[in-house]
Length: 85
Image (tube, rainbow, N blue to C red; front, side, top):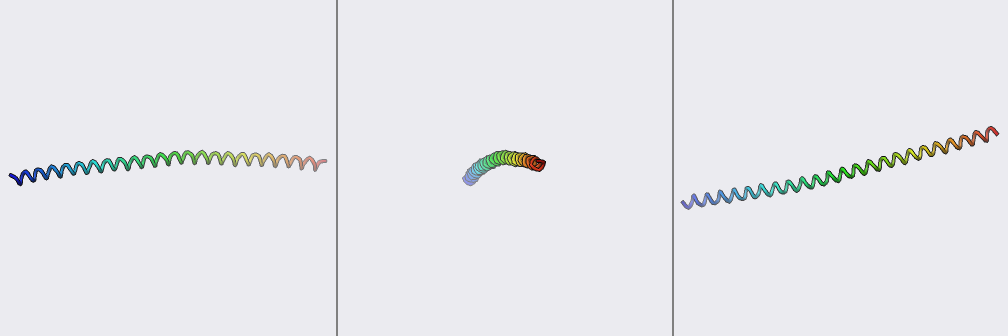
């Protein structure tokens, strides 16, 4: 009888610790997934910021090219004017 009580008690303890272990493992997995989610959110923000900066750079280069073209056109007109005089 004592052996059966002991075995029943041990089975309860094993079951308790198994549930406790599984609960802890799930909590750790949830924490890991939350951290992964935070990393993904930061990567998304970084991608958006990088995209904005790339558009600003493209706009700056295009503005520079337009100004260079206008300046070249002005120089050519002056050159043509002095050449005709």
